Image 1 (cartoon, rainbow, N blue to C red):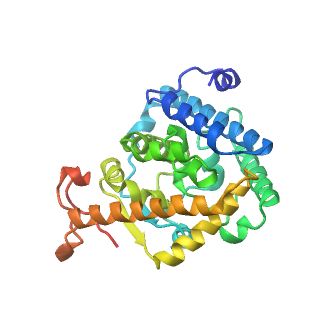
Image 2: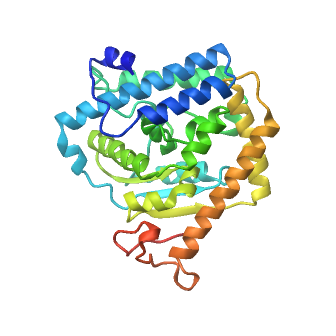
Length: 313
């Protein structure tokens, strides 16, 4: 945190508490992840970059308080278990001229950088990251494309609150992952909205199309922050999902570690995927009665503030 302050010349990380989640993540990385030296270097640089983005974000809010008045209206949110076609659908919808999606280069550096009016630094950073990943794990791209200027999952923006599913999808950090599950996710989703407001401020505030499988686990928090959200829930045979995603995770973990126990990772995520599905079904059954799934019931437990005009597909 001190190094990020030194590099940016800024001091304020914002009102959200970051010390505890950051400390828990670092402890889990140091004691459980078995990273090789390059994996440790990449992880450290990633954390430093996220902290710098938080500092830039808070300074931007100070200079332009009007950013927080930008409306994120009725975002379309694609979610579902991993490997159910969310990426393909996300990229298909992103082709529509009247919607806005998050690009990989924006996900890595969502806040404007100093002296980078044309975003050349941000684009170069993402391009180098793509080339590095292609070099370290060429097989990974056959499973899941990660391209600098292509649409990307908004879960990467949750990294800025350090209450995120990204670490557990890229390295073995079970104690941190279990801690994240127990947290109130209103805070990270509230911060996610702030980052989307910054991105809308940089570019015309079109309607957002977001995509992250992890939203399935925290839909109540999603609806608290985005009460008029439109959800697209993709489905597929769970047996095929688990096998495909376990393969993807193994290749993802191997980018950062030479010691990956594929069976242990698969068992951990089998439990997690089952939990994601059960939580989303419980919320759906409570808030969207089968006799009228097009109406959002006004229920505090569902996270609704408006009680109207919300559909599930």
